[in-house]
Image (tube, rainbow, N blue to C red):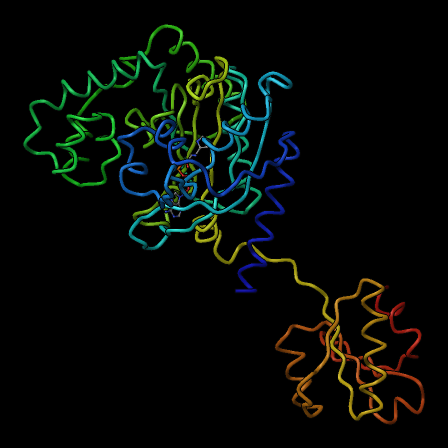
Length: 401
Ligand code: HAM
């Protein structure tokens, strides 16, 4: 609805500004991709590929409404040869994503991401910059009460070790896991860490696997990320069981949760995906990014986010001749960059003034027979209530100052 759309504009405007401070450029990727792109990138056993893709089939191919942005952006990066012409790029995107989920507060089938991807570098300082950027955006949105949780999954080998450690730790508890996790235990043990089931959560809480699976390189990488975050004085928490629900993640992963969001408490999530560019046919390049859920940002921002009010000028013309004059005046004001409108419902002066008030008009211009005779309008300041006469040809300049 219009009043909500104004808040969306505000969020987008702030995002574009902050992204540009970090030298990110906007990318607009298509809403429809070949489904196989997501199967390969997110992983066959991921919740999204298993259950949540909106699929469109024709004779030869299956397409999907994009459930997320990262895979599309990497595909575009490679298809447009950015790996050869640019190497390192910083891209941001704002747009709708689609997941076939059971809708509830903060969980929609069509929702929106404000996201970014920095492709072409494994540098730990980049991880810190990306997390700092997310923190910066939240502060610019005037959102408080969020928590940044980080972890490192390590490289592909480490992830396998983590899965084996977890597998061993859960063997004894298999009968106590929920039915979904029993399947995950066989197919993709790491997915169990995403389970929201209370019994599973209680079992997981008692498992101590923090960092034990990281190889020396990945350990050093994570130490450097944290040193860099500390130097930026970011308030973050280590979350050893944070793995994220998509297969492409490696090394640093993070999630930002908010205290007021209830069950769907993730405002944003992201991390490194150092193998994805190569897996999609490109060179061996590191990459990292994140995405905010816009609807959840709005829930968390609540009343604090104020849309910039336009200064509306509302013209009330009484009688045919005055209406004729108001057409020219509206045109003249708009030519001068002044937002204005008039009463098209033939209301009485009282009724039209009420409408002007409801619309939040800053000024009202009244043109009646008396005003026409004198070639003036009555200008009413809706904040102070003061009224004065202004010559018609001077209205624009009077309102501009
Ligand atoms: P994700 O965690 O699947 O990550 O989604 C990111 C955010 O989108 C979530 O934290 C949440 O705020 C929002 N979100 C997800 N699903 C829904 C839904 N059904 N309704 C409303 N909001 C939702 C990704 O998509 C990754 N591509 C993020 C990323 C970018 N990683 C690296 N680069």
